Length: 82
Image (tube, rainbow, N blue to C red):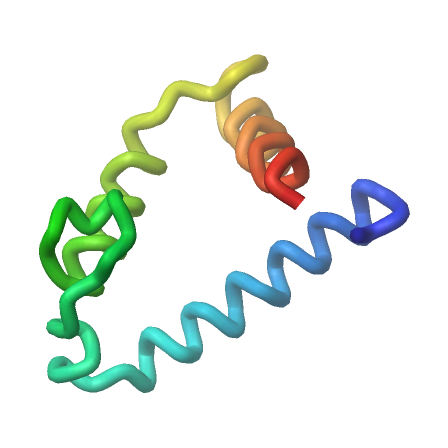
């Protein structure tokens, strides 16, 4: 786990970029594979991704307002899961 907020943010960005790279390389066939994750609602990986995007874009920040509040909220949720 990162020792500082700055380190945690850098780690989050690096992991996000790795995930995005893998998604860009994934074929339509790979994205249509069934997912056992609950957010996929019994459907495929593509559904999992789009449901997570939809949920993230409609979620209200835990605190603050505007982009800074949303960023703090996202980082806070991420760090609690680590």
